[in-house]
Image 1 (cartoon, rainbow, N blue to C red):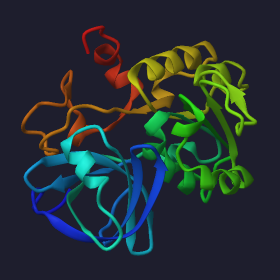
Image 2 (tube, rainbow, N blue to C red; image 1 turned 180 degrees about the horizontal axis):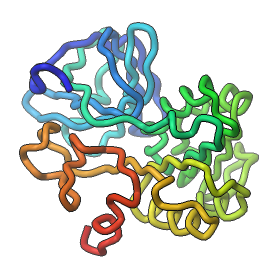
Image 3 (cartoon, rainbow, N blue to C red; image 1 turned 90 degrees about the vertical axis):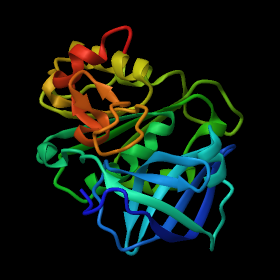
Length: 264
């Protein structure tokens, strides 16, 4: 947690990559410390702020991938190299990567959820993981994130992607992520990290349980309406938990009671 959680910082944008229509990746210059799984609140003066996961980190920079869906994110996506980006953070907890040492780590990402799993996936490649598998589902070819990294990732881990509809440039599988998961052979003591839409998370958890993986071996990064990021406004609560400060990553058995309610 930062000393003053509301203190705004200004970082220069040093690189911008257009991932697909309405989705941009921003590299911002900063020496701030952060952990894989955390997020920052990106700020737009006169418009507000939005919680955006930290997609990666390098020497002297952090990476955010932003989809334009509202006033704040549309403004951020209009920024370009050399502009200043204002933000506060980092907030939230991190993936429990050490639990996977010596075992299989399965990462499941749906859509923009790949931004929340990218950093821990890249970090896992450097750690003593026995078997590293990443299943990624996207609605179509044009919505795929980070295409320019697939070759490198595939050389270091078992990366399998699937898209919802066929495309002339796509040589892989078509369908949904559960099609990949259903055919996967995996050890019962594997650790699983998930980020994606709630229906995808629920369907994947159901399949994982059929494969004998217990709920306390599954972690999910949740997306909720986070406003303050310090656990005061209550907008993001799920049961007794503040997603903004207790999460966004939760062990599934701890949130199952609230996550699986129809009204949540």
